[in-house]
Length: 203
Image (cartoon, one colour):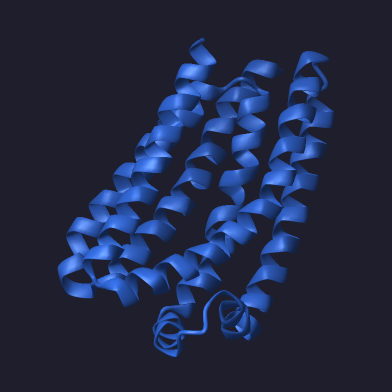
């Protein structure tokens, strides 16, 4: 019950951020809403790939911690991040050269694609900013370190709203995307530091 409560709170924070992102996009007009939704589909596509590694991380982390094989856990984490960086490179290249073609499969609205082109740089940053959060989530769930995962989400969500409210009047939609990118990055960065404490208890 404790683990699931932490995961529930973490998931509610995630939903709050994504729902707020959509709400703000809608206030900027239908065309901007459509453009942001399409760009977010690129993140969703990347997340599907990373989720597979996260699920593997959950199972193998639990197995290695249960067997007290810290050396195998370390090898697992290194392998996960090598694959993760490989996928980051792949998706960044694909999004860099073929974003417009991918979006063309999702809509035939030239005005929407034109706006997406203006904010394409954020699509290029999503893989590198977000990949570690997926991997650490899997590792933390496998280690039943749900409290630490929950706390990292609190800080990341707070960062999202702080950056949005500080910069939106100056940068508009760019501020919204910057807040989202930092939110993704903060999740992974904080969990990387928290893992040290988890590991010290395993040795």
